[in-house]
Image 1 (cartoon, one colour):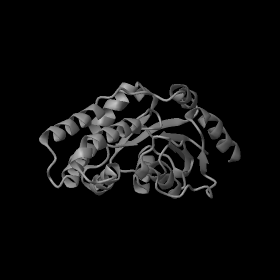
Image 2 (image 1 turned 45 degrees about the vertical axis):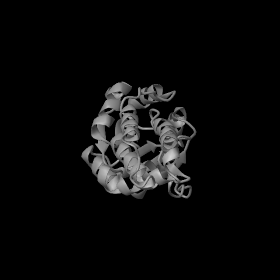
Image 3 (image 1 turned 90 degrees about the horizontal axis):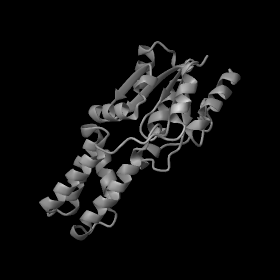
Image 4 (image 1 turned 120 degrees about the vertical axis):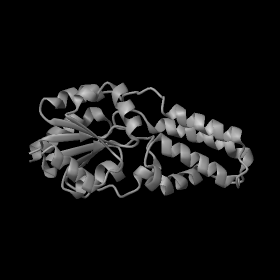
Length: 234
């Protein structure tokens, strides 16, 4: 049986990474005249990866990575005025308005009557709480889980806590690394909704087309039809 549907939040229910993409462009423009590094955004990405174990995911860790990268690529010559502007960019990331994707509210409402609906999102606690609150979707979920990482162990614990067997659960998200591969590893279903603004890091991995529990759709409005297909195949 399929009893529970879990949703990712950022870039699945609402826009998120597009704001970081815009910030990266500004970051590169600010440092161009102070650095000989050709691909500043690539350097920033490497710094972000190295810092994930220290700062986690989200705007705060991203801001610290921008500052660290700026110091490194300028050999410490970056002006304090630029550092100040980078801090401002980080604050802006914590203030942008939430923009839901088309069809999100309708899909959640449609599935709510037949399935347990939960949210599993990762990132900075305060920032995730802000976005969930501003989204107006909080009441749509039976439980809201904000985690620092999405591993198969984390999914196992969450499903155990809500009293569902992982094989009876479906995870919906835009990230191969976080939303698709770990749930499949514990026997859950997984539906990928690719996002053109996806962070490169989250797209690393092999699309599991060989798995009969993996599905890919173009947008969230196609989810109810996919859920029906899964149920009919059981």
